[in-house]
Amino acid sequence: MARIFSGIQPTGIAHLGNYLGAIQNWVKLQETHECLFCLVDLHAITMAQDPAGLRDQTRVNAAILLACGIKPETLFHQSAVHAHARLAWIFNCVARFGWLNRMTQFKDKAGRDREAVSTGLFVYPNLMAADILAYHATQVPVGDDQRQHLELANDIAAKFNHDYGVDFFPRIEPYIPPATARIMSLRDASKKMSKSDPSDQSRIHLNDEPDSIAAKIRRAKTDPAPLPDHAEALAGRPEAANLVSIFAAITGRSSAQILTEYAGSGFGPFKEKLAEALIGTLAPIRERSAALLADPAHLDRTLQTSARRAAAIADPIVDEAERLVGFLPR
Ligand code: TYM
Image 1: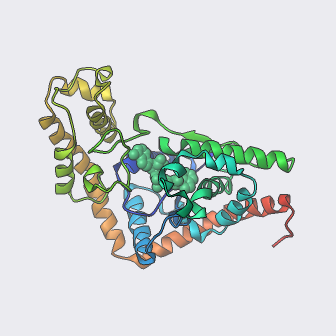
Image 2 (image 1 turned 90 degrees about the horizontal axis):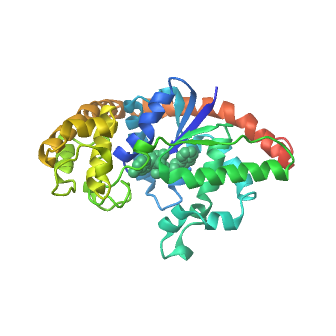
Image 3 (image 1 turned 135 degrees about the horizontal axis):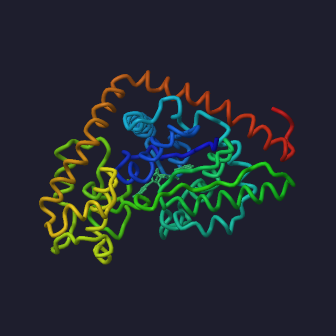
């Protein structure tokens, strides 16, 4: 059975893009695969974090993921499994500077001030490769923005295997269903929905109050034309296309089915029904996550127990990687 690994940064609050692009698929894949899902706190500190805020947000996002239906035994925090950092160091010495220099996400995050960002931000994709390969995971369900990092992980695995004359690390397959691979901002459909967008109106957090969800959808940018009767006619209408994709994904239907129902309608009634559908899915997530957060000690123990299970898988794999590199046994 293929082993699945994926991760989410525990900074900010998980949003609808995370849910439709990743979490929703994780919940489904748990039924058929062995899964490991990780709150990547080591990745989080590549950008400055307030320590108390990071602790709080790690718990809030853990509660949200569990409330979405992630099984408790599959969810843990990255820092609790040392194998990630051990393998990441080896990968820092396998990956080439030029490879990392081509990562578009680094360029975006570093912006103009490259000299001032942490060196951790630069080697971020090496840690991501380690996250996956420490478990010999082969399927990685993510949104489209992670595709380049997964290609790099395959380059790192191939170079390790080549340099040490082994066939040790497997190839990774991205799992990126196209319909939900890129959920866009509600304010500007040329940008993806993102935690780092300064506008709170650009995204729906998975623990937003129902009233706030309805208000964000009401204010979501659209165009004056009515909805068309087929998906191809959404070309050149990115805001409309985004809302139709969200509606389709949240109700488990196709964009074509949504358009058959709303062809010729204005955005007013469409948005009302979309908000209803979102609230129908997200309100129970909000309630369950609040209940889980009421007992943070229990939440911490849940993550710690899963981390021990994860370490039992990763430790022997990373021990072997260290042996292949030439380290003495630990
Ligand atoms: P992160 O925390 O930015 O996002 C978590 C997951 O949500 C997806 N996603 C989206 N999908 C569709 N539309 C959007 N607007 C959208 N925004 C986010 C992301 O693609 C991701 O799947 N580097 C990763 C975390 C990570 C990881 C890993 C993932 C660390 N190690 C190993 C897979 C395997 C990240 O920052 O995701």
